Image 1 (cartoon, rainbow, N blue to C red):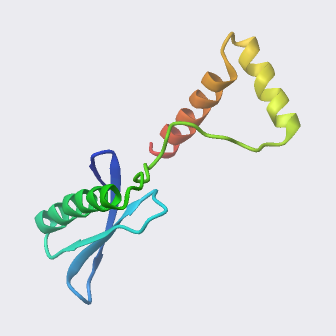
Image 2: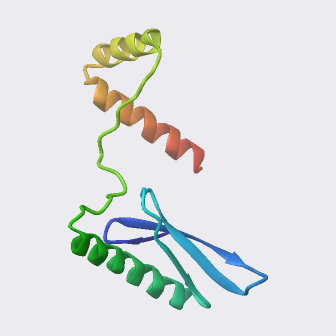
Length: 111
């Protein structure tokens, strides 16, 4: 994965075409890039993000942002209740409790 100006690019290698190709992920719009080498791939990724931002400006449209930091969940009421009780018992907000639970899950899956 590559990062540039808050955008994340995911790339793969096409053995048949002998080239790297990728896409900026987390957007409704489709922004792609490609390169014959890692250096070309990174350059193309940066150029694609820059071109996307210029395009949005010219069109008078706000560019998609990958994530806002705000997450709305729909979970069963009993799970919501249990999480709320656990958070209160630990003296934390539900938001902090859920954030820590997500971090714990993510870091557990990478080890």
